[in-house]
Amino acid sequence: MQGQSIRVAIADDHPLLLTGLACELSQLSGFIVVGKAQNSTELIELLSERAVDVVISDYTMPGGTHGDGLALFGFIRQRFPNTQLIALTMMSNPNVIRSLLSHGVRCILSKADSLVYIVDALHAALANRRFLSPTVDAIMKMHGIDDGANTSLTKKLSPRELEVVRLFVSGLTVSEIATRLHRSKQTISTQKMNAMRRLGIKRDTDLIIYGIDANLTTLSTEAKANSTTSDNER
Image (spheres, rainbow, N blue to C red):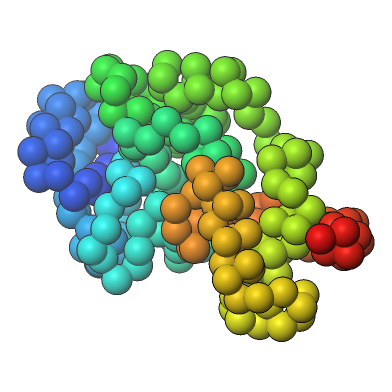
């Protein structure tokens, strides 16, 4: 985009941080802030009305009609495929980082890092390259995060937990899973919550997206066999 300012939209539910980020970007040559949003509703309205090259959005931004986190980023990628995404977050959960990367969000900035990295992230996003700020990069290296999730997932979850997550991701409710697997609703609920705790996931929406990214349907046969064996041993 030589000779043309990069149009940036920023979204964060903290007004002070939003204002500070807009002020920082407005002082940089070659960038123009075309709009600000404090929730997903405002952000989607902004993207629908203005041409935006890059969105810098907080990962956790509740209150909007389009959700936040992976659900929001997935919606933006589908609805506005020509707009690049940069995730801004305070989270240090390695599973969240892995899910963001596998969901196509290639540029991730930690709020713990200096704003100086925003410029590099913007250029990387426009070039469709990966950029991770130092804190995020350190988390990746510490936990050995890569783009493959199946192996790490099967190591983290028991066969019964894996089967519960697979069925939940497939669209079944806890009650329906209990009926199918001949377990109590309480047992299924506990196994689902244990799986979410092991994966560092707190919301059902993120669990579903994580499971889809991990291609859980390809694990169904093995997981079901192991799960049945485990149940018979109970």
